[in-house]
Length: 400
Ligand code: HEM
Image (cartoon, rainbow, N blue to C red):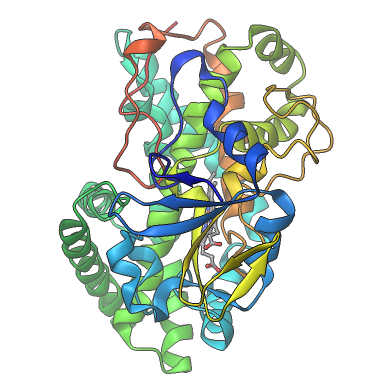
C-alpha cells in the first residue's frame, strides 16, 4: 500500500492552469481504488476513488456518516457533517426523518416550477452587471448572488437579512485547512441567527420553506435548534457549491471555444453540458465525502480497521477510465456520463435538480447575453479558494 502523505482529498485539487482536470486525480485513481492518505490535521484516512468502490462505500451500512464519531472534529471534517439535525451527519431512521422534510421542497415538480423565477433573477443580475464597467467579478455580480437569492427566496429570508446570513454561512463553510474552532463558532452563530427566523415563523407561519420545515419538525418532536441546523445545512450545501459549478462551467466552456460556440447555437444541449461540467470540473473538497467504518471492512482487497475515516471521492470516481471514455477530455457531447458528483445512495444530494437547473439557466442566460464574454486576466492570476469546502476561485474577472 502506498503512502501519499502529501496528498489530501480535503485540499481542493483544482489548479486553474489550463483548466484541465488535475493530473493528481488520474494518478491516484490509476494506482489503486483505495489509497492511504493523510489529512491536513495529521491523521491517516483511506481515500476511495474507484467508481465501483465509491458506490459500495456510499451504500454499505458499515460506512456511517460522521455525526456519531467523536473523533470527527480531529480530522477537520466540516461542521455540517457533525451536528445533530444535519442530514449529512446521521444515518438510518433519523436521517430518513430529516430527509423527508426536504424531499417535498425539492421535488422535481416544485423545482421545475422555479424555472421562470430563476431565469428572471439571472436576467436582473446580468442587467446590473451590464451597467458596470468591465472587468467585473463574475462571482460577485452573478454566480454567487444567483443561488443565494434562490435559496433566500425559498426560505423567505428578508432582503435586509440576506447579506448577514451569507456572511455567517460562508464563515462556517470551512474545510480542514481552515481554523476549525472559528468554523465551529461561526456555525453556532449561523444557527442562532436562523433559530430567530424559525421562532418568528413558528409565531407567524407563512407559505415559505422555513415555516414548512418548522411545522414538520414540531410535529415530529425535533427541537427548534435542530430545525435551524437543517436549514443551515441546506444553505451551506447549496449556495457555494452551485456558484463554484457555474464558474467552472464558464471557465470550461471558454477554454473550449468550439464547444462554447456549439452550445450557443444549440442551447438544447445545456442539460447535457451541465452533466459534463459537474463531472469534469467537480467542486472542491466536499467531493470526498466522509464516512467512518463501524467494523473491520475489506474493500477492493484492502482491509480497513473499524473506526477509520474513509473518504469516498465522488470527484475522482468521475475520472475512472473503466467507465468513462477518455475521462480527462471535456466533452459536452458525452452521452454515457454516470458521474457521482451529487453523491450516491441514501445521502444523494437533495438539491441536485435545483442545482442542475440553476447551472443550466445561469450558463444559458450569461452566454446569450454576453456572447463575447472572456476572462479578463491571465489564467495564472486566478486564485483558488483553498479554505472553502466547495473550493472554487477567489474571484473571476470577466469582460465582454
Ligand atoms: C452543483 C451543486 C451541488 C453539488 C455538486 C452537491 C453535491 C452534494 C453531494 C456530493 C452530497 C452528498 C454528501 C454525502 O453523501 O455525504 C450532497 C448532499 C446534500 N446536498 Fe448537495 N450539492 C449541490 C447543490 C445543492 C443544493 C442547491 C442544495 C439545496 C439548496 C443542496 C443540498 C444538499 C443537502 C441538504 C444534502 C444532504 C443530503 C443527505 O445527507 O441526505 N445541494 N450534495
